[in-house]
Image (cartoon, rainbow, N blue to C red):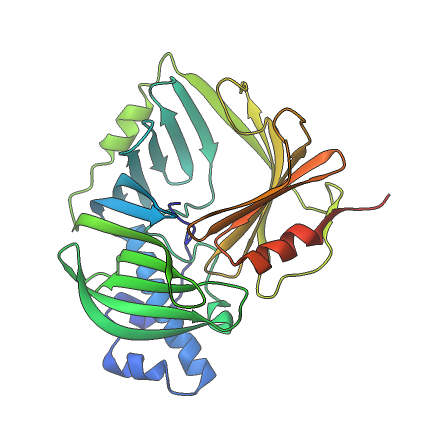
Length: 341
């Protein structure tokens, strides 16, 4: 549930400082080019803060009647980024990131997954897929100034222009742009899911050793190293026969776990994963060999804003999931098919 809002660089002077009253009025100027520029300025400032600021705090996520808490610490030194995410509920899990190298550690099971990731999409990240097309499908409007976790925040609403995506309400720290709270909104404005800092310190001293030292002390852990091979749907014998408005493919990989076993990993030993984005949210399609023991029946599940649809296609099992309305997910699920030989 730690989203999904999941970095890009936009060379604009507004990024370095608080958008002005003029910038806010520009969002409703009626000039599409001006509005697009100012939308990118607001959203880029939020993403830059997540990537370039030092902060540590506790994030509470609420979705579908469930609540989960995590502790997030993010540090920057020069061009290097360091991040530590500790689950505070349920089974102990720690995530340690140094740039694109990520260690996910389950201490009680003595298992560590080591993988390269192009991007992280957990709160408080935003626009990891890029924002060039966001203004085509969402209208952004500053609506208020409120306090979150002791910080003054600008409240922004991203309203979808069609029924294919959810709305979002964002609270961005006035001083730095760091995203302090976010809500995913249904078509009636109801809150489907929320993520927020309950407390956060911004501008702290970087502590990269809190990441680097721990990942060096994993003796005795089962080390699982997923092998990711970049590919294309068509190369693997699949196609998305109908495009979904606003969504473009941002990655397609074959994922295989070296040394993984069913006892140690719940993920399939090999799967094809394709990710689509409209610039703000994501839809993932997983294709794996059908297994009668695990794949019992087709189903549709909903937790907060996240819908998951699973079905069988001959010798394959297809899972489609994303923070999108069911109608959007169905278009993806019904559109993916095996290419005819």
